Length: 346
Picture 1: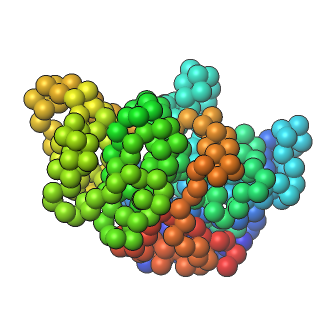
Picture 2: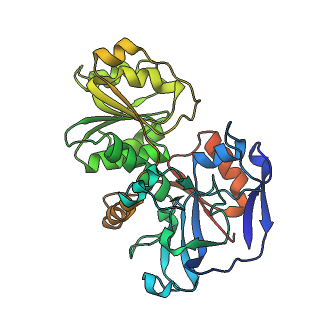
């Protein structure tokens, strides 16, 4: 079967296509033919290498996707799954029972990990998974488009609902709204009845944000964008900022917050270190919240909205898995709006 391998950290040139034997499902497992695997910024970090996180090599990237069940392991017949069924490949997993898992907060468990980062991922033709970690894809949902949903929508759902606890009519700023997480966050905030403003770096990307429901969009390469956001809010500032860019936008994002506002962040694509003015934080009674992924029990809700048309994945382009190097380079060059989906076997 066709598999992507990272044998050493580096540029997109370190990505290799190799041929490996097709695996067989064990007890409690399913064998899935991968129909689509999305490319995330996390794949770029895994390929480049992350300080403090040793990654055994070779590593198969790919955090999320969709597939079709081709074989069931022993004991799976009673799990409501069947050969030929199309399924969602879940990005996160745990290996041990814990209070967090029992409370439906698996993403907060001490042993929570993400496929493609902590273990091999989905950038391959076939994958074996515990049956527990495949979710039936709703009827009528395109599996290739749906491959762009799990990681970014689960992350955005966790940012807005689990951590920021958004309420209808609140003002929400989504930084880099045309990105995978950003495009999901705009839609989720609008679905919750919020007023949404976003930033994006080109005319085309700003148009996409408006198409997704943003009430206003500003250019985050314009140094005046924080003032424009504050003006949009009639000088009050925003209640919630969704931030995942880091140093390049952090100062401006903090300046946009209203009194009692919350900034929630899930990453830093421009670096790991930011500044913080403590008087600004405590005088305005602000909250800075970190967020990692979201609870897996949100995935059925998310895909229910996808099936109903109230949430939609943003797929910039679909490419053969064999062009994975090009896909990584496009994402690094900021030439992507939403997600790239790769098709194994091509």
